Amino acid sequence: MGPIEIRRVYDEAEDGEGAVFLVDRMWPRGVRKADLKIDGWLRDVAPSSDLRQWFGHRAERFAEFAERYRRELDERPEAERPLLEAAEKGPVTLLYSARDTEHNQAVVLRDHLRDRLGG
Image 1: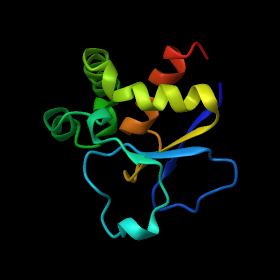
Image 2: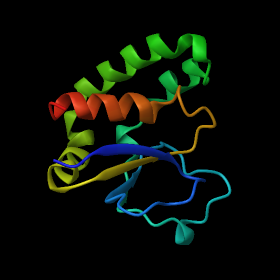
Image 3: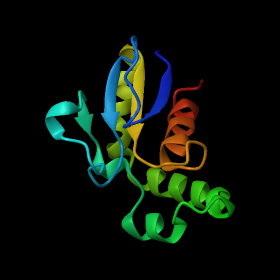
Image 4: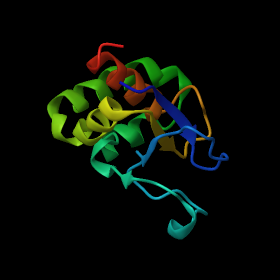
């Protein structure tokens, strides 16, 4: 099993990132599709639009957001399957566009996937 890491889509790629997936529901602003080297764009693994709008990237809502998002992930395991399969083979990097590097869906998704894989 490879490590699962996260990176802002606007940050420079690093060596050893393995399989790279965009995990935002919407394409990031200012990024051309041709310029982004990814193995897949997994919109369905992102939080629902309603949950994303409720959260509004407000740090004080992050704990509740994380709980709700994990429940959404539990309800649709097929959405995370490509990430779990890739992690079984090697490193995985989850790309996100949020400015806040500590309070975003990729943090929750990374931890959720690590829990699923037992690590």
